[in-house]
Length: 365
Ligand code: SAH
Image (tube, rainbow, N blue to C red; front, side, top):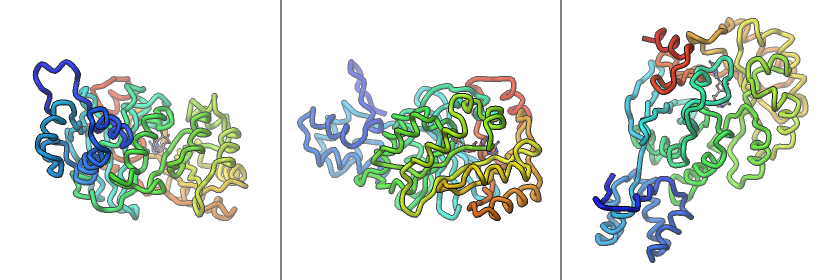
């Protein structure tokens, strides 16, 4: 980070700009559009953060840009590798807050699971991130920055990869930053990520979901359903009291799903809570007429989470009942549980300590 001493105007962080904004910022300085594209390509295709190293820009231009602009990256505070190859990155943001991002090598594609908020306001009963509460939204640059940092650290910048917005946070609760990050990541002058390689997972904030259906850059949609009735879901996903099951299903029926694609319904299986044969039958009935596939996630248990993971037999039985009713179903293989990188296990200590978080922290020491 280079900032001239005596500068009164703080440097603009290029990582917070989509290409149109970057072009506008350069145009203000009398620079042509192709210069902006060159800088954008350096940041995303080559992972360069030092403007001085953008060698196809004239030397004097680089020097003057350096006075006005910086490129900020989240910093890797630590990195842990699971026995199954999954890697969890703890990233430090410029204000000292931390988030986690996960690299999953073969699901079957290479996947980055990235965060959209520090903490989360949704407080789902079985999720550790929910115990943190919402600390703050991530910026578009911090969301896209996770991809830059992981792709760079793992030397995957030139490879095809998928992104799942399934890390910390509720993506539709930070809508504008998430969509701007989509614009940055999908831009043909940068990573050129096809939107179909991105999956956005949400509890179903309805107004935002309707808005998502009108976006030009449309990610795949995953709905965290977790229960077939309002009574059950209300206990697990508190926001259900505002946006109930029937309304979410109706919104999904209207949602403009891409050709040959479906909406994924995530369903965390909790022993004795939502895993009965009746629950499976109710779920199958609920999804009749929806272009759906179900992804069962046997609970990743943790201290402070008052639920248990069902037996493999119970999981199989639940899946079989759905399959018999022509519902496409898969069981999510939990990755990185040994390093607490699996679904619902992302929590960062020392930012906001709820009793459950303290308990969780202690249990993992
Ligand atoms: N906030 C978004 C993205 C979060 S995480 C959402 O709710 O969809 C991705 C998935 O992991 C969600 O379906 C979430 O409900 C699930 N999950 C959370 N805690 C879990 C746990 N302890 N075990 C298994 N899955 C969990």
